[in-house]
Image (cartoon, rainbow, N blue to C red; front, side):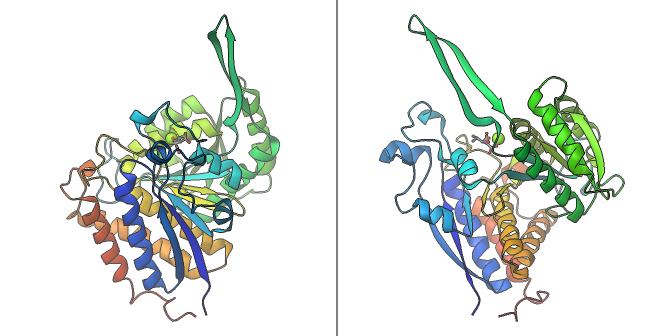
Amino acid sequence: MSRRYKILALIGDGIAEEIVPEAIKVLKVAEKTYGFNLEILGPYGFGAKYWVTHGMEMGCDPAVTEELIFEADGIFKGPVGLPEWIGKLPGPNLPVNLRPDLDVYANIRPCRLRPGVDSVLVGRQAGDIDYIVLRENTEQMYVGAGGFVSRAMETEIGLDVFVQTRKGCERVIKYGFELAQTGEYKGKRGAPADGKSRLTCCGKWGRCRGDELFKETYKEVAEEYPDVETDYAWIDAWSYWAIMKPDFYDVAVMPNQYGDIMSDMSGAIQGSMGLAGSLNAGDDHCYAEATHGSAPDIAGEGIANPTSIILSVGMMLNWIGDKRDDARLKAAYRGIDTAIDTVLTEGKIRTPDLKGINSTTQFGNAVAEIINTQNESNPFLSSP
Ligand code: IPM
Ligand code: MG
């Protein structure tokens, strides 16, 4: 009897209500095609709207217990936050807290120009851009150290302390070297320009001490990976070079906030934020989420591109497949990735962000139909 994987689904705000069901649809068809067994719990209400309407301490459906969060094989969530709720949130910031609590220290954000998608960079074709922004996910600006200082009832200082540790740097840098070695989550291993496996170390050493430590740690770790080419860039310069010569990059590892910013920029580089998958990965837990936000400007219209969340849950399956040594889940990830490429290449079904007229559901259906036809070529169907 094949083992059952527990997947916790959380909805979120805005377009989350439209895209999360498409991710669940894809998981269900992948489960059937690739012959594994998922127990999808939820999708449970969670996010800004939930906080305000329910006033929950945790900001989540009470069914989502701490125990459930920690025992799930994988978690995924839609984007959270709505402008009208800013300043009204009674609960703690669950989405960001999940990262340190689950210790998902590596945020993998691939940037791939897919077939059938117009590049915003003149002359770039599918395959020319295929790099990963690997964002450190638990430290630096996001440790939450800081506060306000007041004088005469006036807030005078808002203070944020950036913290980077050797352990935090070392583990994400190792993760980066391993991604470069394996080519995992990429269209093809190596940088598109020369096929070399390369890990670019980004930061602002010489200015920030935390980044000095990041770079020194990178140098030490690099010695264990002689087959991966080393490369260094100040983060400001990297934001230039990623646009000017994106094909040179394979994997770029960077401290937390830089990765936050560079992954949005990479959303543009790959043609739409709606195409950008993202996985928060640790040694024991993972959770998937779209890189983009809740897009209140188009929420409720049913036109959001669900690709980002679909790719993210695919990446989640891949992570679980690695950890539980289950090749069916890894095959399903590749199947989902290929299905997205097929729909984009055919170009018959497109959401408006890609100059199409189709709905979120139509796009999700098209992806699901393709995964359904992957049966014949799938070697894992007969596995127990
Ligand atoms: C992201 C988001 C989050 C972040 C926000 C919602 C707190 O921008 O996942 O990139 O800053 O990490
Ligand atoms: Mg962000």
